[in-house]
Length: 270
Image (tube, rainbow, N blue to C red; front, side, top):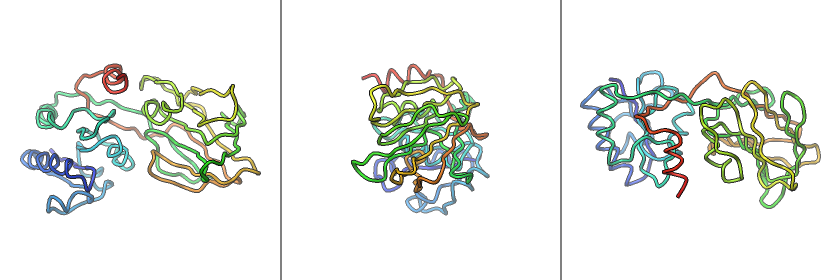
């Protein structure tokens, strides 16, 4: 088996888990270790792009942030080991890492595919979003003026702190915290969730994937930030347009049988 290994760097708890996981992987195949943790294992590191080219299965150790980092370049199946308090996207807690990896070796798993969003800023393609695309004010305590368009039809003109366009995967993240709905990942639709809108009637929208969602800042608006999966940040000017559609790429997760509804109940309903 050809494995990829990606983990949260500079974390003592994660490092202890990674050391044990690495030994197991090395005993059962070839391991390509991401640069961020390679030094702690005294091995040569590679980029996530190289891991995607060479590995059959990618193991992540950390939380949802580590998974999103890996998903920027990786579309191979991900087996996610949780070391954080939440880890909504992860499959097993660290104490079950070895037993989980043994199941993977035996092929006793399913691969779940999740949608990604294609993001264009004035026609230039940016990294895909597995969770969400966020347009937010670049100035603390200052709102922005913008329009939301679906297939070039304006559905809202808002003054707000910003807006989130999320996949069903991202619907249980930032979008949920601003009042967005929980969506079964099998539903082929995106969520549009305004952030602190200055209007009582403004509510989240659910839009099918075949539609194109665009955000335009008003000419009088201050510049904004465009953030993809809480990681990649770009300046968004009033003379620009951000458009989001369904990507041809997918996020793939190794699953053992826990349903989406079980995950929601166990990790979000507390």
